[in-house]
Amino acid sequence: MMKFKLLLWMLTKLLQRAVKTNPKCAAYVKDKNVTFQIQTASGEGRYFEVKNSKISSHAGQTKSPSFTFTFKNGSTGFAVLSAKDSVNTFLTALRTEDLVITGNFVDVMWFQSLVDFIQPHSQSSSTV
Image (tube, rainbow, N blue to C red; front, side, top):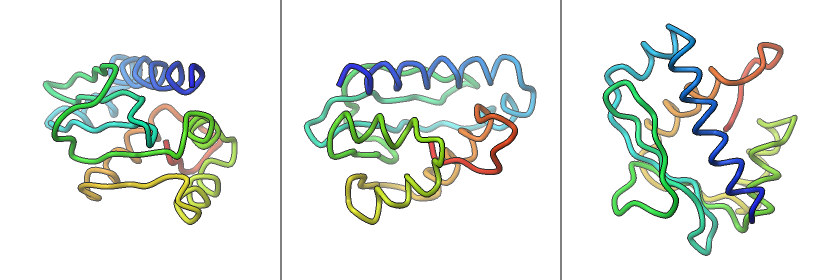
């Protein structure tokens, strides 16, 4: 569980750095106002806020996220989020219900594109 929590915290830092150092990323979040969470089935995780051209996150849950990624457990969440073959791993987790996505899928797709800003350039697409 600790690796999962650390990974979510690092995701925040990577996204914040991308907003500060990449003008395209800064433009991408400029007018966005969304709150989402990434958690385990037991409720452990973080919620993320994109507001006023900034990204922040907080431990725990928010009452009304736009969307939620819920992993079966922390080790599954860590494995999916840190996988080298992220697209196939992500899709497999959805198929096997190790990951359940609820909420606004337009915002989910927006988030998927946001995460592309922190991916190595050798990858063409990402999941998280």
